[in-house]
Length: 149
Length: 98
Image 1: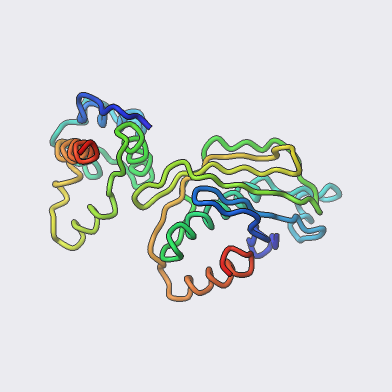
Image 2 (image 1 turned 180 degrees about the vertical axis):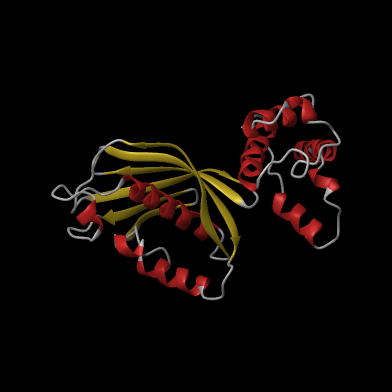
């Protein structure tokens, strides 16, 4: 994870048609921890939600063959079950619940080892790339995390 | 997803809209435009479409409809007025059942 750059996914571990599992290593140090919290650094819960959203987004974008991008539209039933400290190794899972026209609904989960530390239902809108540089940037990032060869 | 289509698509869609977007059921008439008259925004509409997809076991082709409207190939009333929307959903269910 590069928290300051909002890059939550380090590596794709598993990819199926309707499911994607990613690795997300929480950095030992980050400016984020200076405020959250002084003397007791914790990964903010909203960033766990973001990690689920990005994992879900990669699944949706891959399912569309990188012809569309996905943006987060709704977070439901979010539960932040555990505190995550710097250095933690997280697995983030996204499973497709429904593939609609112009949107997708997915179930996200974050685990630190066996324990579940976060979960949520996520709705993503899908849309044509609104800027010419987005598709190559996404493809480059997808290659870096092992989603594309 | 539901496998059996509801007997009355209009009433089911009206219930979905009333529950999902907190719209007074009495306002949801066959002549009501989903966006203009019922004041449903894009996110609520997305929730409504998700619920319709699930309840009727279809995939409402919102993008194709929107494209037809935007390109002038079809009037918005063909898809986004309640009576027409119910008819379109019934057509989708019938097409799925073959």
